[in-house]
Image 1 (cartoon, rainbow, N blue to C red):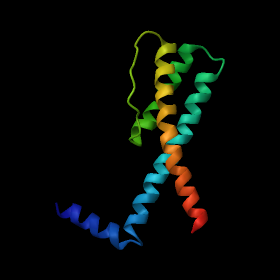
Image 2: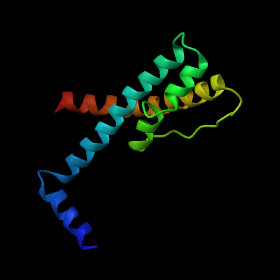
Image 3: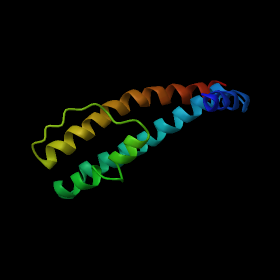
Length: 113
């Protein structure tokens, strides 16, 4: 409990706590968007579906997305590598649309400031 209080004190004393929180969230969103681009490129490539599955559901894509807390909710058809990849990447694209709207607003606000 004392450590939580010390952290909160440090957080708000350091420059501007609210700005730091927004920057951290924005950084997560931008990292997520990079990973979505990678997942879409893998899905749309001429590689085999087995390779696509192994690459997307690895430390390179899905685990990085999980580590930043951005894993989308999706229905895993568990039918084939192709269906699993299409379902996961489709859910990433859907989540990315919403995040893109937020990032666009942030970028717009920076231009106005």
